[in-house]
Length: 123
Image 1: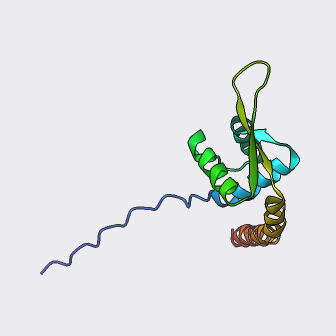
Image 2: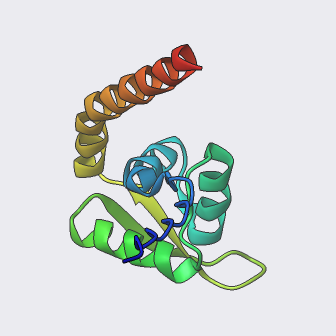
Image 3: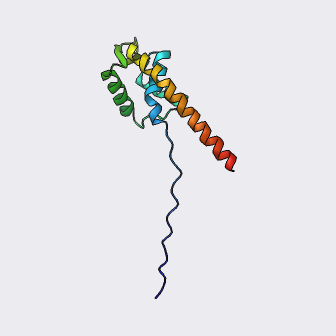
């Protein structure tokens, strides 16, 4: 009787660590700095290094949800040239949410630094 050969498991892809969970606090932080319309906010998020939803629809869904939760407000701006744009601003509740998010972000930062340091020590 022959010994069956175990199939070799495929090598998994590297872990895809994304900053999606940072989207809400990042939006609030950027709006705290300056009111913004959606396209401008996408650009500012990318500069911050936060993963932006692949479509503007994803960002606008997040903003709409945050508005429903009272974290942001919005109004229509009608510039002299170009189309009207919805401009988003942080609300008082958004300010509180951002402040309450900072300890968790600090903890996440310590955890990631610890993991990276431990990885480097094992090399």
